Every structure is written in structure tokens, then in C-alpha cells.
Length: 411
Image (cartoon, helix red, strand yellow):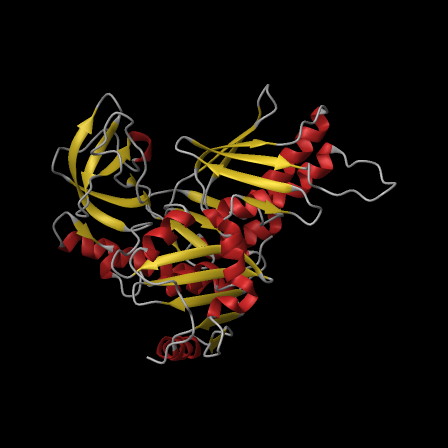
């Protein structure tokens, strides 16, 4: 299990760049634009704009300039479509995707769902859902029943216990459940008081604060937050003291950029490269395209020790699996992905590689579906789209600002 233990934050006039690090390894880079706050997971009171019977879907005006796309299977708690113009409570599933291949003007709107999810540190609350579900990391019926017993009487609807909930006490779990319930009740009150379209998330204090969101997601394992903005570091330290958190907050004011810590800058460069080299010399090539991302395993440059037998294809592929999983998340690659592993003739070996990849991707918060090996030996998977690729986000940011320096800010 990946344990995010350090958050390194570079503060720019245009954006926050957040590096999530686990034991010195860069796991994820979050770029939060000040002028264009992320819509991901945002909750809106929208207006049903148009129903598309042939697609079994509808367009919903959420007031962002682009109509959102709501599929019938993403409705929750209702049968059929409400009347045109009716208010619809929705949540952004992703910030824009190719939804209609034949519609260039409306094919980039955000994907919506009516299955609202309110995330806490230990629980995800689905007020329109039902039952209690568990992260696969929470094992054992006794532990699952213990955790479920602490939240059943607090939250009506559906609840997912996150992996961070494993082993925690009722004294930590219950306040988290109460907090997500309070946020949901606040959203409901605002929904009753306003006219669509309305951004309900924007009415919750700090809900779009990128650092607060990251602390909510990973506060259970975070040990340290490092920022290159003194004023922000002070405010965050005050907040940690108020909440009696044990997370250390440090202002970085050294001569080197903040992303020199843990060689984050170097790891970003690696994530932007077409190929990465593993310790053995095996290389993994990433080729993002318009319709799919191709990943190739190249062992031609791998040096073998004299007198040693050549490595088995399964061993080379297993070495590449962690790098593939890491880079899919770090590069934020989505859609169809095809991996050209070194050919393995044994079904047992192929199953072993598929199981290893499934385990490595289990830490990814973005849903990934594995389809297995094709008759040609290619491995197929899909990864849901939540935002643009890392390269696209950095290029858009760098068009408007000089290269980040991270040398410290005394504002």
C-alpha cells in the first residue's frame, strides 16, 4: 500500500503545485489554478436542458459555460427524466471528455452524476445510496463489522470506508462521519435556497482549497507539509494546532527551489520523458495518442551479468509493472491503454503479471478497469478521465508564467 507521507507545495501567483510523496517517491502532482478552480467533485444545482433519447442521456446547465453530460445510468433515486428546466442536483465526475464523437461543440462538457459523494478522511458518504462498502485494504469480517457499526447510526444512505479507516478508533471515525454529514446538510440547505444553475461547492468554506482537500484525502498518513510561502505556512500551522493535528508544517526558504526536496523536479522530468529506465536497464516507453496510450517494454538495453542465464520474460514484465502503475497515475494518462509486454507463452505467467498489475493499480484513486491479454498478446486496460494529462496541465501553466523557481516567498 502506498503511504503518502509528505506534501510539498510550490506557491505561484497563478497556481498551487502540490507534490504528493511516499518515501521519497513522487506519486502524484496536483496543479490547482487560481483563475480556473477545478470542477472535479464539485456539486451543482443544475437545470435540465435537453434530453437525448438516442443516447439515453441528457445535458444539464450547471452555469460553467459548458453543459454537463448526464447518462441515464448516472441518475440516482429517480426513474425517467424530470421535465425540461427542472432543477437537478449533480456532481462533476470529470472535467471534460469526448462524450459525443459526432458533436464537436458539446463533446467537451463535464461528465455528471446524481450519485453525490462527500469525501472525508476515512469515509465517503453517498446520501442517495445505500449499504456499507469497504476498501479492499480493509480485511476481515470482524474489522469490517466494527467499522460499519460506528457509522451506520450516523449516516443514512450509502457509506464507503476508505483504506485509511483500517484499524482506527471510534474516536477518529465518528467525527469524520459527522463532518461529512454536516457538509451534506449544508449543501442541501443551499440547494433549497437558490435558483439553478448554482455552484453549491463554492458556498462551502475552503471546499475548493487544494491544500485542504489534499489534507482531507491523505491526512491519515501525512507526516509533513513543506511550503515555499511563509504566510501560507503560518496559516496552515495555526490550523493544524487548532485541530490538534500531528502533521508538521515547514516553510522552505532555502537557496534551492522547494521541488529540489526529494528530487521532485527530477521526477517530474522523468514523468515528461517518453521512456524511463529501470534499475536493470529495461526501458518502459510511453506513447500517448489521440485514441489510446501505448506502453512498450524494451529489454534490448538491459545488461546481463556474465555467466548468468537470460532473464525470463515474466521477470522482466514483473519488474516493469510498478513503474507502469506509478507513471499512469503521475502522468494522469486516461482512456484506453495498451501494454505490449514481452511475450509470455505460459498462461500462468500472464495471470501472474495481470495480478501484479491489478495490485499495483489498487492504490490509484482513479478507477481503472483491466481487460487482460488479447490474442495478439497485448494487455488492455482503461483508466477513467478526471483531468488533463500532467504534460497538458504543465504546458498550459507555463504558457502564462515563467518556469517555477520555488525559491521561497515571504508574503
